[in-house]
Each structure stands twice: as structure tokens, then as C-alpha cells.
Image (tube, rainbow, N blue to C red; front, top):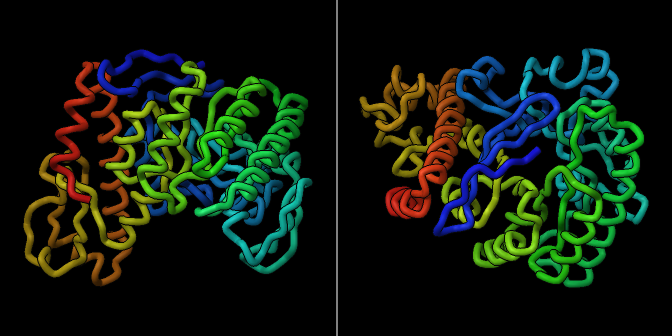
Length: 369
């Protein structure tokens, strides 16, 4: 299922290929986020042109709108979205737990109020698993409890115990209902406490996982704490298990996490930044809506060969953004997703050639972000 092809000799970076019953994707990989079953501003054909091999879709949002029955009646997520490559569904745990005033958590699951209309719902871990199975995603993730940072040891311990218990219940439902065309990823919590991360990891690995998700990081903790936990997990986790860092996503963060053995990332940043007039370039982020670019005739990134950089100037893109022309958002989002995909391609090539250490050093020295 997950085959490691190359390992960097000077870091913990590795490249590989992950096979699903539907498709396969190369690692390290970045999956754009399609929260509402769409990557904002980008069509499925454009994603295919860019070379995107997978997406993250949010089960919580689709449960509320349009509803699982609607998607199932349309033939499942892939047909509903018009996207035929790998789809991962997030359980919605992070979104639910971010609604602090709208939810109540106990050992049986989560009661929450919809952020749309205020209706009250209760979802058990088994419910969440059945929802994801019905959606037809290729990779599904059990409900977990994500704690804020900083979290007390007691709160983090409670969340770990619940996450382990909910994962067991979820795996039972998965094994009873899966027809062989879906994979089950476990998720570990524990905040920045090493012993709790170890407890969560041990509990997850007992479930015969197809992959391992790292949750509860990038929630406000210091970068050194974050990378200490990643290093610890790299040392403790089964080497053959794909490691997926959920919700992690600026370029300098990605390249550091890759050096610590992370294989898969997702984040809303490329399209979110595009909507606010920010573009990623080989030299760092530029806020193209700002006045210095009003008469700038060069492309967003001279090293990028995407459609946007071949055709349009910074001045034109700034104009579109500032007059609130939807095309500006679409073009910047396209460029950013293309740039991210190319960035991961370059990382994989560097690992393959055993030059990742030097590539990382040069990238960090040049990139301002």
C-alpha cells in the first residue's frame, strides 16, 4: 500500500508512493482542501491540468449541506464533485471542536449546534464513520477530540483516551461496512506532551491502520514544540506507515516537516491567500494587491511556468483584485495551487537524487515568508 522509494541520507525525509483501491499518489504530497466539495476558485479540470493527485473534503460540512443522501443519490463524492482521483474525508472533529460555544462533548460523542441554522445534532464516532462510508471517500478518518493550545495535561489526557476509544468504535463500523474500496487512517492527539502522544500512537497502531494522521498541531504552539513532537513521532511510528500532518501548510513549515519524515499535507492556505491577493513565489509571498505592483509588468514568479505566469502581469492581477473581479481570485488561486504542487514535485526530486538537504538549505535562504 505505502512503498518508500527513497530516503534522504542527511535528514529523515523520504519519498514514496501510496496506493488506494482507486488510484495512487506520490509522496511527499500536498492535497488542496475542498471543504464544501470544491476547491475554491478552481475547477476539477484545472486541478487535473495542474497534476493534483488528491483532495481533502470535510464530512462535517457535507453532512449539514447538502446532506449525505443527496451525495449518495448522485453516485458518491467522486461523481458529485467531478473529481476521479484520491479523496480523503476529514471527520470534522477539528471543525466541531472549534465551535466551543456550540457543542458539548462526552464519551459517547458530540452534541453541537449547526453554525448554519442553529439546529442541534448529536454524532457518535460510529455515526461519523457511517457518514464517511456513505460519502464514498477513498480514505476516511475517525472522529477525534482536538484540544486547544495551551491545554492542561488533564484535558489532553482525556482527549487522548476519547480519541483512542472512538477510533476503536469507528474501526468496528468500518470493518462491518467497508466493501474493500476504502482505507482507514488513524489519528493521534496528545497536544505537546510526549507521553500522551506515545499513548495515542500506541492505541492507534493497534487498529491495523492504513495510514497515520497527526492531529492537534498547528493550533498555536511554538514551532520548536511542534517539531519536537514531529521528531518524536518519526522515531516512534512504524516506518512503513504513511504520516499525514493534517492542516499544516506554509512552504517553510512543509519543508521542515518533510525533513522530519512527514509524507502528506493539506491546508486551505493556497486558495485562502489567493482570495486575499497574496501569491506564492520562489522568493516568498507577495501581496499583489498592494500599490508597488500597480505598474509591475513581470509575472508573479519568473521561475513558474503556470498558465497565469505565462500570460499575465502583476499589474493586471493587482487590477483584477482591486476592482473585485472574480477572475483575479481565480487566477491567483490557480497559481498558488500550481506553485504548491510544483514545490512538492521539486522536494520529491531532491529526495530521489539524495539532494534534499541542500535543496532545503537553499530554499530556506531564498524564501521570505
